[in-house]
Image (cartoon, rainbow, N blue to C red; front, side):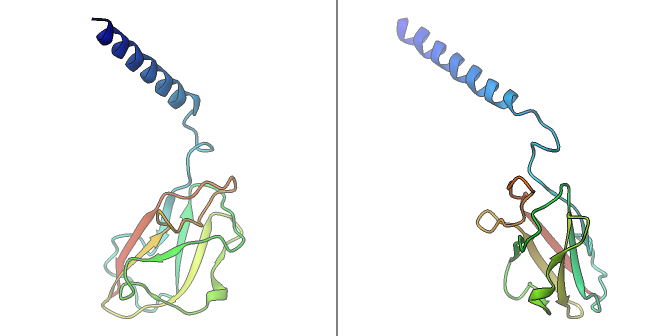
Length: 139
């Protein structure tokens, strides 16, 4: 009987500790990691013009903007040709990053914006953005 009471008491203490830890971090825009709020082209768009010359991603928070990005491949075949490595940049809003590209007609693209391993898209406090898979197709 004592073993069951001790186990139940230890479980209750563990739950109370975990609950306290979760409650200690209040959910606010500031405390949560940044997330993608918009992409151009839009995710799932199947009628993107092949003449599109840039991909834009906008985050929910101000980001670290000094060469802090992780445009990552799903596969080499589905990643667009980058036309100017030095042209990758953030807009003055501090939330939108641009990737200069050349797209091919009638092709599907898949681009990870951050991954578990490659997570340089970070807010100004250093929190990595939640990974996001952008998928679209050109006409």
